[in-house]
Length: 238
Image 1: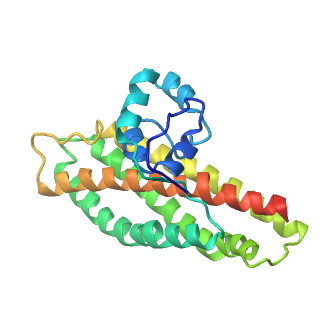
Image 2: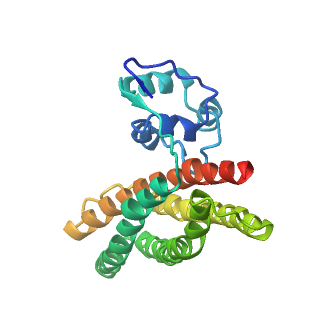
C-alpha cells in the first residue's frame, strides 16, 4: 500500500511502528540517540521527553526525512523477515565479529597504555561477541524453525506454543543485554570520538564499532518490532 504524499506523524505512535512504516526514520533516531529497537514499544512523545528532546524539533526532522513513497512492511508469511534477518544481519555478524576482534586486540596492545579505556572497550566487545554468537545460533537452530512452523500451518502443541513465547521473551532480554554492551562501548569511546594520536587501525576500529552498533539496532528492531509481533499474532489466531 503506497502513498504519494507524506503523512502527519502522530506523536503517540510507537517508535517501532514508525521505523517499520518509514525505514528512513532509523537514521534520524540513531543521530539523536533515541532507542527505537529495544525501546520500540515507547510512543515517540514519551521517548522525546525521556531524552530531553523537543518533540516539535524531532517531528520536523522526521518529516524532512519522510519518504514521499511510503510502504509499510506487511508480511503474508514469516519466512521473509526471517530470511532478511539471517542474510542481512546474522551473516554480517558471523563475518564481522571475528575480524573486528583482531583489530580491537591490536589497538589495545598498541594504544592501551596511553588510552586505558581501551581495555574496558575490549572487555565489553568480547562479552558482546560471545553472547551474540550464541544468540544467533540459538535463533537459527531452535527458535526460527519453531516460528516458521506457524507459516507452514503446522499446529503447535500447547507446550510448543509456550516454548515459542518463552523463547521470544528470552531473546528480547538478550537484545537488551547486547544493547547495554553497545551503550557502554559508545560511552567509553566518547561517542566514537577519534583521538588525536589515533593510527589507521584505531580509526578503523571506532568506525566499525559504530557500524556494528547501528546494524545491531536495526537487527533488533526487525526482531522485536516486526518478526516477534507477527509470530505472536499468528499464535493468537491459531
